[in-house]
Length: 204
Image 1: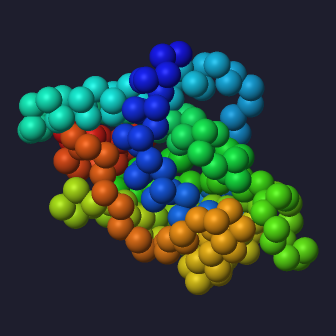
Image 2: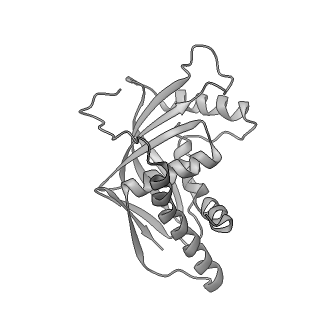
Image 3: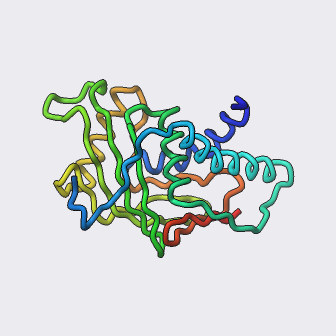
């Protein structure tokens, strides 16, 4: 894989990565996420469709100082693969992630967190399943997730609990902590994001 493309794609997607990272078995009737098994090479190839698209959009915006007024569509499998790719490069705490994209900017997510090397209190399990239901909000090329429901394993939790966990992990890694309701800039060249059933619409 071309190193220049890889690093540019990672940079372009880092804001979206941060937004989901801030949201670090519920009943199947509520969440039914397919568990990804193997196929790492195929997963990488799927992720690079998004990363390379962001690279191309960033380059166009830089060279032409404008937007293309087009819409790109990515499946939830491509979007999930993209975030797994980003997290594997930047945050080993996130072991895997699956997203379900629904109409009206609704997102459901499952994240498996690996906390064993984070220096957290002993009452934390080494691996924690985190589930959420949220709405994607965008405003003036910024994005955030507005959480509706949030679970650690099968237990509903308040956002303040997750904010505390984010703070503990950030401090143990020498990072600045973000809050669940933080806003993030969209990648260069991207105007807006919307969701439909099973897909992400990217306005650029």
